Length: 239
Image (cartoon, rainbow, N blue to C red; front, top):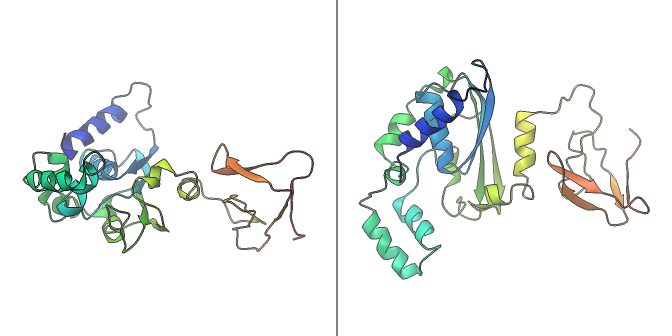
């Protein structure tokens, strides 16, 4: 397994060496788990900070994870738990630099977390899951939110993998959309993200009432409603 440094260098090359991009381009990065640490390293240490407007991290262990958590979670997906725990003990010595760098208390994370984030132009956001005891099954909410952030959300009942595999249904996509492309509140009467209902989240209380059993589907950005053109509709109050 490659080190985080090597992965970050690969990310830097992928972005900065692309001849199709203007030298002054700006972009956003959405990264899951270790990908957030890789992205942070590329931004903070390899010169991407002037090109990345927003970094959204999903379940990223910014203060690391314990070896007792990380290795069984990987191996138990493919091995019975007894064998997984045996391999956990063997791997703690760790021949996998990317994993060892993620361990709580590693020199790599200690050094990375000493970066003065006031010198970073990139906005940092975190979405963390919590399925119990402050963990998403692998990463604690405390670790995910350990660094200085421009925004954070903790989603109850969402596990580590679900932060990206079920992002359209658990609210992750809508949260990211609102961070990257916030809806202006100037003159806004109502805003309906259609997260399984027709509620207005603008703060103005103009909640819709649904009729005919409408369904909620994936839209171009976030969720949308599907109407049959006959007896399904949403009634909006006068404002």
